[in-house]
Amino acid sequence: MMIKTISLFCSALLIPIFTIAQSLPSNPSVSRYQVDTIPLVYDLIGMVDTGEFMPSIRHLSSYETRLCTSPEALEAQDWIKTKLEGYGLSVEIQDFPYYGGSSSDNVIATLPGKTKPDEYVLVGGHYDSFTWFGPAPGADDNASGTSGVIETARILSQFEFERSLIFCAWSAEEVGLIGSDYYAYTAKQADMDILGYFNFDMIGYLHPGNEIHTDMIAPSSAQELVSFYTQVAGIYLPEFGIFPAEPIGGSSDHASFNNYGYMGIFPFEDTPNYSPYIHTVDVVVGLSVNSPEMAKTFIQATLASLATLAVPYDNTIGTGPDAEGSLSLSVFPNPASDQVLVSTGYQEPMQLTLTSMAGKTVLATEFSGKMRIDVSDLPAGIYVVRCSGNPGNLIGKLVVR
Image (cartoon, rainbow, N blue to C red; front, side, top):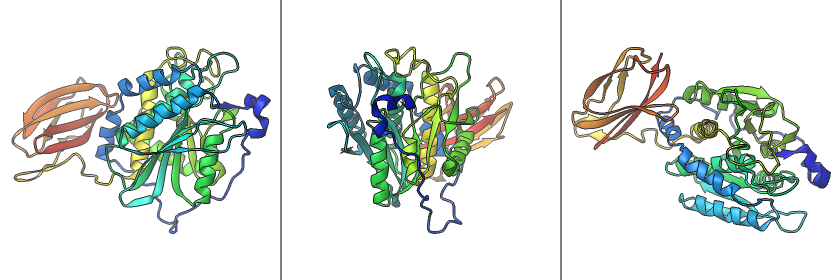
């Protein structure tokens, strides 16, 4: 995260705060921010894995520094590029003018949309780090956010969406939002139709005694996107608190998009109780990234928003026909507090798993056709019901109360 005190050595590069009229769809009466319950999204957020993104945080924070002018930043840039290319994405290294001569660059990966490729949904976070003295491991600020971008790319690249998804790792955020500002400026010049930008910056520090939640930083011009994110999270992560907040004396890359008339939002770890180690040698895993579970929740909330806004190309992904007709998953009653009957109409053996929203499997068994399960001992909440077998997979939700 860029803080105002950076102006002591880089005041000429601070990004001015201004607003350009937001681009609107040709038919403003039809909102493009449709919130709905999409079974596939339960599956997607269940794929978020601490075993995937925590090693990325550790790798990025192992560099002595990722200051944008350092050789280590170039190494981090190339490592991120290789990771994203490994998911089959088209990856661009975007150079930008830098006042000091040379800098590491933006890393931009694209998953083209199937039916609306010229409509874009963006997620990003900066990978450069900064400290006043000594090494700059930058685990929370912002290896955590960069790893969130990589994790969303890993998962979403396995599926197809109507709109294009762009995954961005920014450079030179700490010296004035330079990388993201250049991207947003060129996007505006090219008249790119960006529906929203979701920012990852500092997602791994949980103040002792606090519950996992986010403080939402966004201007009034981005409130439609804030509302969208809040409603989506309410469906898939109903216990995730989202609270309005003011900037904490600095800014982050979402501001670059707001400055050029796009909507950018910044779900932040905690405005009054963010990591006390920011911009010190102690921004390391264990101290500054002390809650992998919180980072996972942040990634899940943004992932759900990205998938919902980009719109899965085939909402029947995860289902398939059997010899007699079509598979259909029925869970009744729902909500439930005692017993539920799960049925598919398919008489060959299938695997039934019941998974909590935290990713914990609470039931795994084989059944044929239908099965009654007891949920009376389960904590209240939302669970993902998954039936898999030779004809295909079925995914639904169960609300236990």
